[in-house]
Length: 111
Image (cartoon, rainbow, N blue to C red; front, side, top):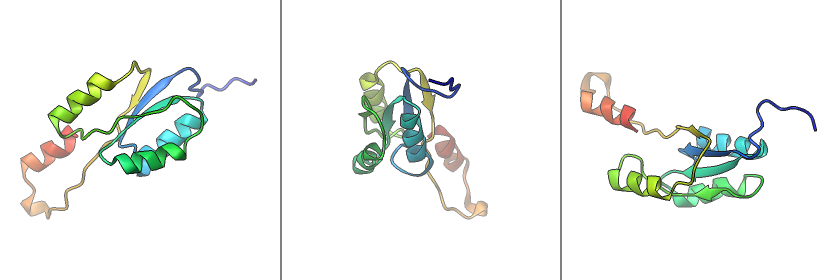
């Protein structure tokens, strides 16, 4: 076996925003590198779609809305020990710049 500095063998990684886009791609690649992945996002059906694209075993789906305090607390309570995280969750706001409020920006960054 050759040395791979990017190997995730024997590692568990949390990926937020795992239901689509970059988060889904991170999950798939992390599984190909031998990692166990904890997938989270708001859409459980889409998380399951990500899961079927992944390689290996031991992955875990924990649906959560990171903008909701109760949902976030449930995620934390259900989390196994992890070796790393990819904080990829995001939301969008389509607002003309002249109508953008500080609260809009705070919500974007809080997620």
